[in-house]
Image (cartoon, rainbow, N blue to C red; front, side, top):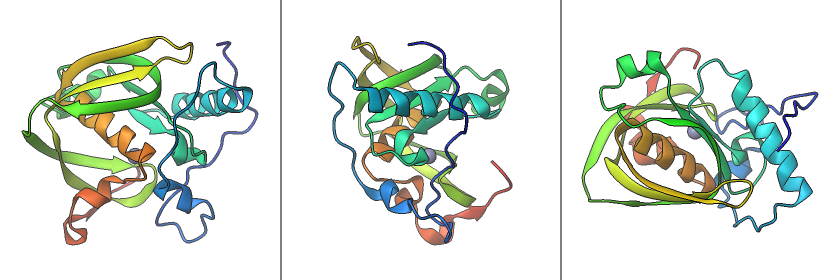
Length: 184
Ligand SMILES: [Zn+2]
C-alpha cells in the first residue's frame, strides 16, 4: 500500500465526551472484512495509520476509535521508553496493521496493569488481562499472521481487539476504581 497522508486526520470518538456524536460506534461489534479489501476500507486503513503516526506515543488504535466500524487495528510494541515502566514488556512487534484479528488465552492466568485509551477521556485503571495469548490476523494484502505472545504485547492486543467487539477497558473494572489521568 502506498504511503498516503489524508489532508485532515479524523478526530477520536470519545465515549465520555458529551459533544461527540459518533460515540455509539464504540459499542457496536464490527463485522469481518473480506479480501481483496475494497476502496472504502483501504481509505479507513490509511486514515488509521496516519492518525497512529501523528501520535508521539501510541501503542495501538482500532478503526471504531476514529469513527469506522471496521475490523482493523494498528499496533506497535517497540517503545524503549515504555519498556522501562512495564516490567512484562518482553515481546516486541514492529508497526503492524491487522485485519480481522482474534485471540485465544493460553491459560486462565491473568495479569493486572494500568491502561488508558484515546476513546475514554481523563481516566485510567488497572485492568486484568490474560497473561499469554495466541493471536491470528491478516495483513492488508491478505497474508495470515499468527503467534504466541505474553505480557504487555498480549495486553495491547486484547485491548485493541476488544474495541472491535464494542468493549472498552473501563468495562473490565468497577467504576470506583478508575482514577484521573493527565493527558495521554
Ligand atoms: Zn483503546
